[in-house]
Length: 566
Image (cartoon, rainbow, N blue to C red; front, top):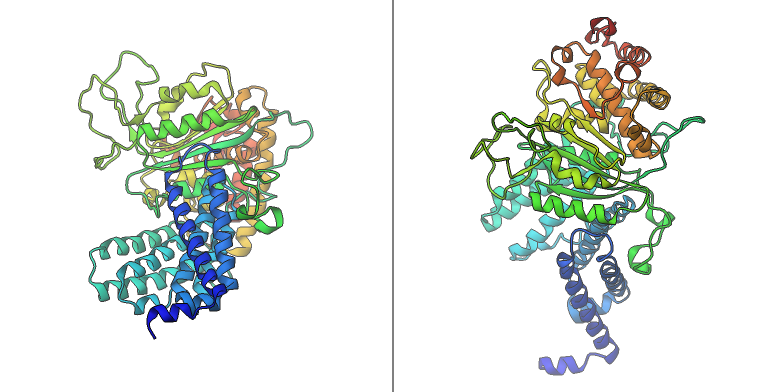
């Protein structure tokens, strides 16, 4: 029978099923490809488009489930094509997380990616002589790994890395492609990312405990009666990573990864708190935003950084705070300047779209001019018209100590040490110690104490004691008579409260540590300055730190009485 005759034999209903499927498939691809044309900044323009895309993919997914047999027989639907649809839905959920900062969407992305693996949707790809299909499979693995990293599913990550390694080996052996180096680099990056933590927490059977550093219900110290603090809420954050030679994976440096987790709550099951995006009106929002909205900027140019900053500033709601986190190589001033203005101290590096000279200090073309590819303190002045909370982790963080509060709005800068003691093993490639203190203060404390592993029971005991220290730091701050009001204005927000208490713990720890006391540039600083005797050098807090050191049997690395040394 001719093919025309065979086609005539297809029942009308089945022909309509294939036609409807092709329509939904084409429509879904068209909408998905349009996502890349949406502006990356601004929180309103993209929502209705995302809603439509989710809606079509939801219909497509259900349609292929309901009509699988007809599509197998009449359309020739292959399992890898079903895998592609599931992979696209996983990508949609992941990008919805990036747009909204709702960690619950990561769970949804994980469930779709996980289903692809469990049902072996891509298993037949290797039998087809089409390298582009194998690349789809490899990209799926890379995306799945990113989601698992963000959900701290490290056991799954290790399994996926092994599978990806085998797939890459098979791919390069069969097709002799030119992208072998690139895929091997992906493997190296994720391996370095997994091993970035300097301390391992171990179960009794020596398996590694996966610790989460997102905000839990018991995370931030509670506000007690009588604590007078501001009502500002953290609404938006720019997380910027531009460090040379730092561990990264998928445009996310380890510092960016740690900071974004410090600004998120533990994920909940999405179904329990809200509808899926494809099932809701596109303008509908969750009843309560769990996390501040975030932009993640990897090696942005100055113009990119300023564009996102302006968009965040514009959309910042009333009584809200914008946070800027800068993890970047320091740019130092060229020569001596007669003035001491906001452009005379250098700043941190922005990308110049060309290869950057290695090393921390960049050579200047002309000493009479300021460095162009640099975010100077003065560049942030226009944005201090609204409450601004800045964290600078850089070898030139002190440039931001020379801030001026022009508009009287709450303004705080937390500044990293500009150097670390030589006796401390260099960990800069595996992430900054300062950011580690803000993300996981106990791990940072163990590292500076020379410990590289710990049993789970002792870890949990120390975490309990650290919570007590945080409560006491909160009392020190709110009871201080000389503290700048900006600190108290920010203290009402849980995320900022936790960052401030961890900053004070970090600063107090370093000031008591024997090898840190060789140079003052080994200490964190802040603008405005904190009253030392009431916070970072408070005897009550120092006693707590010595007690924590005693629990860990590392009291010998700290000075017993630091006040006498000043």
